[in-house]
Image (cartoon, rainbow, N blue to C red; front, side):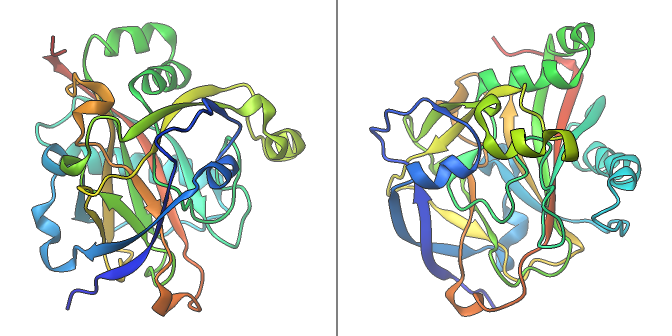
Length: 291
């Protein structure tokens, strides 16, 4: 049975003047537009959503169990597993997938990102990269020659998000990309050189302060429709299209996966959510760039 939830999603105001932030902790200070929305349960129609139509899709995926503190095995085993997952799940089939990084949300570890390490769910509506930010990320993660060659044909950034245990609390909501409108996404430059947490833990935890890229923060429009998957389990995964060179219109083209965590009032006292998200560079070397 579907369980729609009335809850708050945090947005930035459309007239936001800030153009630079120093980490995800800044999201909350600037996301002053709090909207009380219906977040629709996708459980009974989860197969209806597709990356091309909505910017996200739910899939069944049985994953190897890797202790979340074992970063070596996460990168050696789970990165390979997620690359194979996308190779076999996407149509048309990619020619190459590189899993570039991961983020863990768990009370068991505070090293949840190689950039800011911000613990806990991200409660502000956002997109991980703009077109410009995606290109910076590509050149950060691949040798310059490879990035230059692979960006001459179609490529994308697709995130794979999955629970580490059944999600009871702080589920992830995603906006139907077809309901986004021009102007809904505001580009923000992330400058980690000013991130106090990354500076403090850089030597000990390996958090990076030298990287900067551009994300998008979301403003609200009444056409937006938001979804989540109730009691999402460990054998389910969410694919989110963050960037695709096929979307020639960039941010205003829509069909990307703006997302945010939200609080379900009926489960706020349940055990904290544990999840892992993989950022993946996906390439179709036989498909030319769209003009």
